[in-house]
Image 1: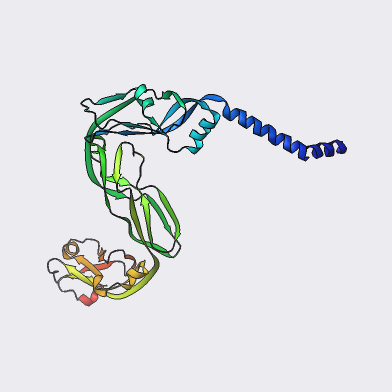
Image 2: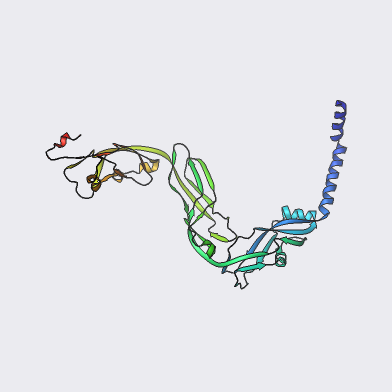
Length: 324
């Protein structure tokens, strides 16, 4: 048995056998590629409309063309010829109806760069276009972005784009009421520095809605996370003068702030304001009030000590020092 296997391997690996196999494959390819076939190829479709018209319902990006050609020609169309297309120009037509039909003969007639192949048929055989008036609007760019900073880092503010407005142009009924336009989806992980990169706008409706510009500059401010403790921040009372019998304590607080290191370094003591409204104090029935904290943009208060303001009322004849 082993001898038979060795003999078979010897035959298969022999130069004579490999040469015969190569010749057979080459002959098969030659015959196949020179034989005339009927096959389907995909061709991109473009339609040029009158300047005052737009398509309301999406049309196919490609059509299937049934062709009669040699294997070489079909192979060339499928894999090598990127110039083949169906480009239909109706920009000079005066169209008054809502629906416009492009017949099979017009589709075949407008096939371009197909080489020496015979187009027999197309799918779809007719194109029915629902048309409407052109509308143009400025809309807000909405970044479709997921960003995860590295541990110990933080995103400062919102992810933004430049420009933050783009122009959409298309069927007025289709785009009326559109207020924003998304970018393509992108994900950024383990981010430890700010990002500035170009990002394309979504083109899922490119055959009925034109968006300009086609891309925006995406900006994300990522900084190292930092904290700071600020002591003895005074409580400010807003509104009318607090009646003398109402006592609030304490009048000073220690707060812990967190944010990007650059934002933390820019903090000014005067930018931090802790307040209570005197009306809220007078109307209080619990004895504990939570002060309002005003901070610089992109800074968070993660701790305030004490957490509450204590409110007491001095009754007639009562010594303020007796209030706990």
